[in-house]
Amino acid sequence: MAITGGSRLPATHDYVFPRGALVMGVEPVLRFEPAEERAKGLPLQQETDKESGLLVWSVLVIDQAAERKADAVVTVKIAAPHQPVPPEAIPGTDVRPVVFEGLTLTPWVDDKACRSGGPGERHRCRAKLAYSLRAAGMKPVVAKAAPKAA
Image (tube, rainbow, N blue to C red; front, side, top):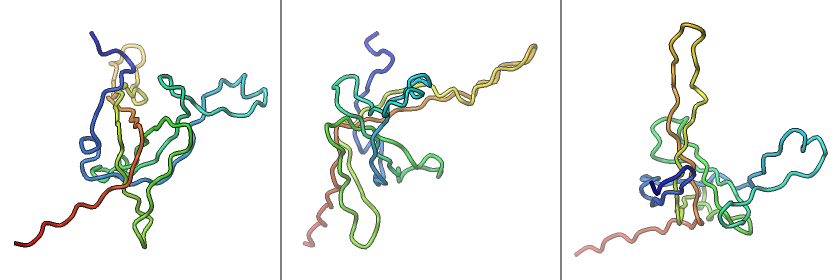
């Protein structure tokens, strides 16, 4: 099979964010270090992308199509040599609409809610399919011109 674990599946911005996305902030993704390494007191390192070797940045986004508030905040990772700059806010607001370019989805199994029963009990699996989002970049939303009256 051509699709393997960790495959990045291409998707369009409009497919993932049909009602749009709003940027809340951008910050570096720090590399996970085992406790032994952290105990040495070495400075934290930023994660690098496995495919490109570029630094990885986390963009905190509000998905305007989310049905529950708990699902509204998502993270989109961008690999870039420098911190990506979010678009300017709409004047008079903190709202920063954005369009992601080169968006990909990586499916994974979120098994945090999966609990096995004790001896003689049934296993109750509440694992669910989740997606990790990555993008090549982001740009401001371009307002569409209103149709001309005839």
